[in-house]
Every structure is written in structure tokens, then in C-alpha cells.
Image (cartoon, rainbow, N blue to C red):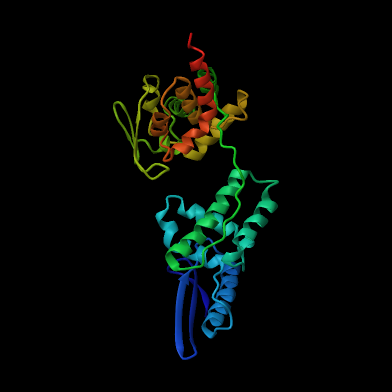
Length: 321
């Protein structure tokens, strides 16, 4: 049975155990968690044919993109903070790289871009193709696969344009009346505006993260590191509602309703984080300080607010008499 469902590991397993030219070849691989029966069978057929061809010398040794994905999901994704989500995204791309060799990666990327560009944002396309490229690069570096060809990724305009000011934040805070859990939702809005924290980080306070007298000690944030965030004097009352007893999803629903009610249909809760960055940059704060406060691992992420910084510098220069 070359491929079967491994009940203990709750995923499909590929096995190969054959004697070819007096040499026994034994291989077993756990396939990605997100793969279904059809994907497992497709991999089985291609991999079995490849192994026979390579062992008998009838075909040149080449590797499938799906082989690289299997190795990446098995050995690398468990160490990544968003590893399971990456596995899911790679599984969704399976129809594009099914049966394709690593040398065809550029063609796979082009086909995906052309098929999805009318309905998917460039940033989403770039992220998904980056996962596929990372899998092929991993297999090349650690498992001696052939080097993948370079691929063309869509250009993404990363400037952050969506944010609100203090007046709009207060208007939003007052709009929760009658929606339920209004105190908790109002608290999250104020804390987000004055701290730049992500929703998940705020929801973790009082659980894995700690509320301190002078700020917040965030544990295992999005970039995998701990972070200290100082407390603004204007949220000393709001933090009394932490930890939030409602679910993250319910808080998102309430805040979305309130934003729609006050005409902020284009704004998301995460944009309050952008509002924090914009306010700090407009106050002529150092970009690296903003980076540390927001928990950006790379200064290039913070530089997405460069359009705000440019205007601030222009205004600053005009102060010269």
C-alpha cells in the first residue's frame, strides 16, 4: 500500500519499498496535514514513477514542487509561528503546482498570477508565491534538490493610508451603546489607538501576557518575540476591563458594526495601529522608536509610513526662517 492514512499522525503517508537492480529502496514520508485523498494519490503516482525512473536510470533525476512542499511542511513549518496557515495556503495552491517540477516554478508562478490577479490583491499573491518559493529554496538548501529558478512577484504598494484621528476615535468609542459588551469594545478601541497593539496582543493580556503598573509585557508576539509597551495615561481606565472575557471574533464583529454605524466603512480595527504610527511620526518621533513600539521586526515594515514621514519633514523644513 504505497499511500495510506496514518491514523496516529492524522495525515496521509507515502511509502515506497521496492528492490530495483538488486538494491532495496525504502522511503516513507508524512504528507502535509491539509492534503486530501486525491492530493495524496496524485503525489503517490508521480513520486513512485520518479523513484523507479531515477533508480533504473531511465529518467534524469528531477524533483517535483510537491516533494519540496512535503519536506517544508514536515520539517520547517512546525518551527514557524504561522506554520499551519502556511501549510493551508500551500495546499490551496496545489492545483497550480500539481505534477510540476521545480524547474517549472517560474511558469507555475506566472500561471497563478494571471489566474488570480483580477480577484486577489497583489499582496496576497505575493505572500502565497513567497511560501511556494520558500519551500523550493528549503529543499534545495537542506535536501540537495536542484535550485529553483527566480520567479516574478507582483509589486505591492505598501504605504499605509488608512487611519483615524483622536476625534474619530472618540466618536467610534461612543457608538457602542446598545451593541452589547460595549465597555470591553470601547476599551479595546482606546487601547489600540494609544498603544499601537494588535487585537490578538490586547486579547492576550491577563492570560499569557501581563498587565504591569506602567505598561504591558507582551509574550510571544506575531514576530515571535516578547515586547514591552508603555501605558498611555489616557487608557488607565480602559485597562480595568482586561482581560476581555468575550471572544476575539465577537469583539471584531462589534467593532465592525460600530465603525459602519459612524461611517468608517473603509477602516479596520488594525488601522488604529496605523493611527498610532502616524500620530507618532507627525510628532517627529524617531522611526526606529516607532518600529520598537509596534513590534516590527524589520525597519522596512515601519517605512511603509514613509509618506507620512515625508510630509512631516517637509513641514519641519518650512520652520526654518
